Length: 140
Image (cartoon, one colour):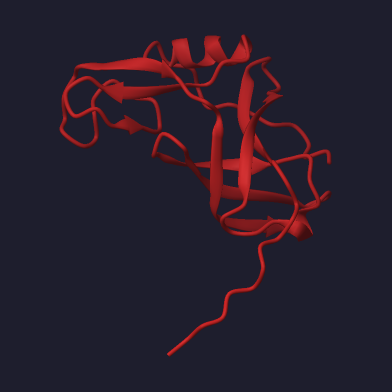
């Protein structure tokens, strides 16, 4: 699926290691050395305990779709989603290289970088499998 030209946000000195790692195929997250929690988006101050003792850590690049929306009026249509990473944070991203009609909440996804117009690597995700889970029955 072609989603057109992806663009990256402005590069700041604070996020430079993130973008450089992406070019090398590595996805980095920030983790707080005081409270031990990962956070997204990359920033130097922990949003949970406000510590400045944060550092970069490599992410496994796996997660699940928390919520998604299909942009059907676009040409071609594409999907954006909130993906909850296995490390804990939830990030907004594009879901790529898939049949957008077979996406579902809770679906396992894996990191896939796509090139931006300026050469940086944009973290996107693609489904691990398109097998939908059996429907759940509501009781009570």
